[in-house]
Image 1 (cartoon, rainbow, N blue to C red):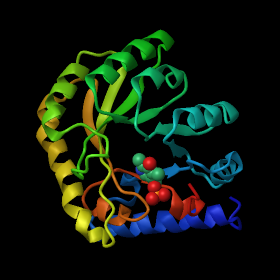
Image 2: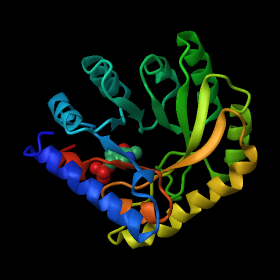
Image 3: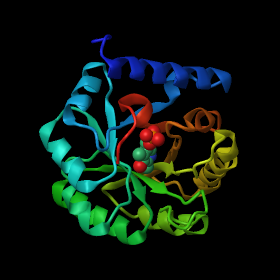
Image 4: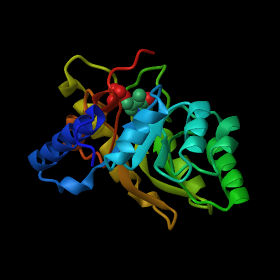
Length: 233
Ligand SMILES: *Cc1c(COP(=O)(O)O)cnc(C)c1O
């Protein structure tokens, strides 16, 4: 542990806030996985976080992600959290651990075929548009059933839950209903569970709103600026 570097301090601080939010809502402190979002940040920042014990990292651009995966070889668990273009899936499958942003049958089909080529099972979350903003990606709530039943016939795609991005509100309390919506969609979709379709995870909550997300049942939070500092772009 290099407890004196600023990234270690921020990580510890975020972990403490996660634990406090768990206690407040009567949840086990270990029930929330922290994905450190390292987009736009240099590889040395990721190395520092790894030295402080951080395991999971998230990126939102395929090119930056593949370059960082290459430089850090076997080390972290990698999460693709950005909008997923179907034609880029082939660059990810040999190394990616989780994809949070699948929202089309077409992407599931391509993922199955590419994952089968490399004989790797990939953890997938279905991204749902919970903010009702046009520019935010994700499927509509009404499309979930089709996606989940399509996925249940696949062999290399492991559906692990749902992902959502709330709208930005000055007061994070305002997005609680959006997190609650994702939670209830997960519960309603349980009927579609299959050997490779398990809806145990809710990936929701970022720097500005993760405590609310945890209170509403998040099991994965994706946090960037509270760990690595503000991004310039
Ligand atoms: C950038 C990003 C995050 C992290 O954002 P912060 O506000 O810096 O915590 C989380 N999720 C997604 C999908 C992102 O693109």
